[in-house]
Image 1 (cartoon, rainbow over the protein chains, first blue to last red):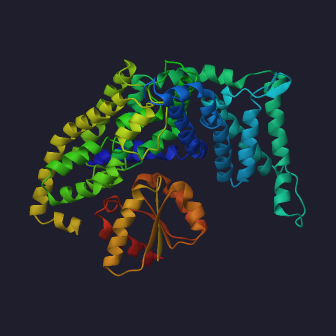
Image 2: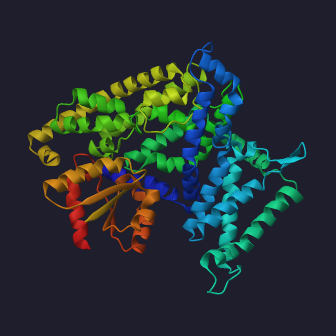
Image 3: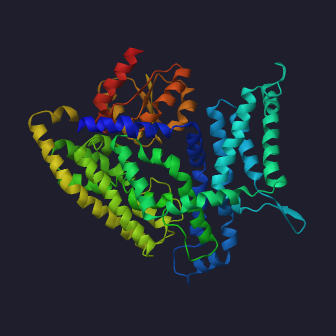
Length: 426
Length: 103
């Protein structure tokens, strides 16, 4: 067993985790994450605009009459998330190259803006916003990386304007950025204006099969499995898998939010990041809240009892490293089995429940440390049935973990009798 | 002695930090510990720390964090998984002491 585990760690989980540390993937990851506060706060204006209360009430009617005004903060944050993300990617990538991060962020924003053609409406220039949102995220990743790479190329080949040393550094820095900025703007202008290519349209064609696949049941189960697989080796699964998957998850969330904001009754996607967070990762990756409860109620060994007491409160707030490393689940075949199986089952159930319309798809992003029933309620824009689904999933997790825990508990009691367990508690 | 804990978002290591602090208090050691996410390491290191410890679940980022720590010539190592629990205070303190000795 140990040989097999170390084989997997050496040849599979280790290299894959390291791959997620690749420079560009990391820049995308950190860039998307940097925009999350704007997405979280912006999405909450959707609840204000469509409050989960009876339509006849005064507040609901008032909100209904002022939808457009209430949604303005949402339109200028979450709705144009790609603009924020472009800056984040440009900033992080140039920082990783030791280039000026501020210039990197700015040049990424410029190149994203240059994929969009302003329109003239009533003699005023107007920027269409759709492609600055979730819709433009793939192009954003592409052009942000491209523009920083141009910066790096210029720096490496010394294609910059060098100022004498007496010139203040802020001045010389702005001159240093001059040539790369000119190159990026020229390049993007040629594509968008001269060649008249709509990059968003092109990338859509390429990305649409991927976007479709990621929202299928299979497309949900694969990341779910991979995340617990990585955690089984003690690697932060969401942070590895999310590096690749989060952009797609964010596209789903953005499109769902757009559909709601437009007053559509059809919310298009089942599986944004919020779906995983609130219906599957209850108590943390591996759906461990049910496990901690089972441990608290039924374990008899001193160690597991003490551990479960310290892990309940963090578990309610979806922090489960204490239990993952404490039980431990990591490299512990007995607990890895339910740790991998449980989320696959609750994911399937939640997917079906959402697909057949028993639960509203998620379109709001509450902070991930909220207790799951509250988070799920908010994420679905106030659907009480989401709370029921969360409670069912906790029960499922409880009962799947229970037999494995009991077996493990017996082993622990044996060990404690032999006097080995005590040293760990002390 | 000032020790910086690094995990994905700074949340889980905050719990472990509590365990370490308690253990240090028991032994009457003067220990300042703080938990941060991987993205904050660089900013934090500018303020001067004696040791960086990386949580086991982000050990695949150890290399990149190590590089940052090297720039500030602060020793950096990963936390053994068995120590990364609320009950792992004693083992954790032992790790900290060993790493500081190596320095």
